[in-house]
Image (cartoon, rainbow, N blue to C red):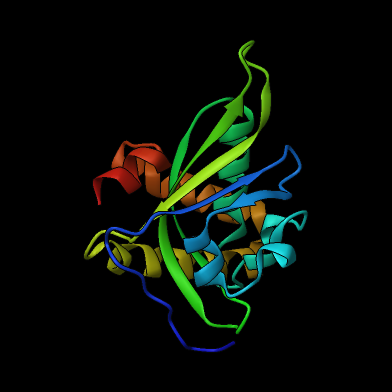
Length: 162
C-alpha cells in the first residue's frame, strides 16, 4: 500500500451518492479529483472501490446498519485512491428519500477531519483491525461496544465529541 497521503483544504466537501446496494450514482468533482478515478470509472461501481484495508470492517457494518435503519451517521474514514495512496475524512451519511419517505439511496458528504481527532481514531481503528484478524467481526463489535459503553456514548456521539 502506498504511503502517500492525499490531503485537501478545509473548505472542500467531497460528495458521493449511491443506490441501495452501495453502487455509486454520483460523485462531485472534488471527490473524483482526490480518489483519482474518472467519473466513468466510478459511476455504477461499488463504493467499496475506495475501501482502504486499514479501515475496520465493523465501522462500515455499523454505518450500513445505521443508515439502513433510516438514521444518519457520522464517521471517520480512511479511503484509498486509485494510485494506492489514501485520504482521511469525517463523513456524514444519510438516506436519500422520496416525498413518501421511501429510501432511494444514500448521500455522503465528507470534510477534512478535525485537528487532533485522528490521534484518537487511528489507534482505535488499529486495535479494532487486530481484533478482527483474531476474533472476526463479532470480536471487533464487542470491543467497540465495550469502548463506547465505557464512555457512555454511541459511535456517532463519540466521533462528534473528538
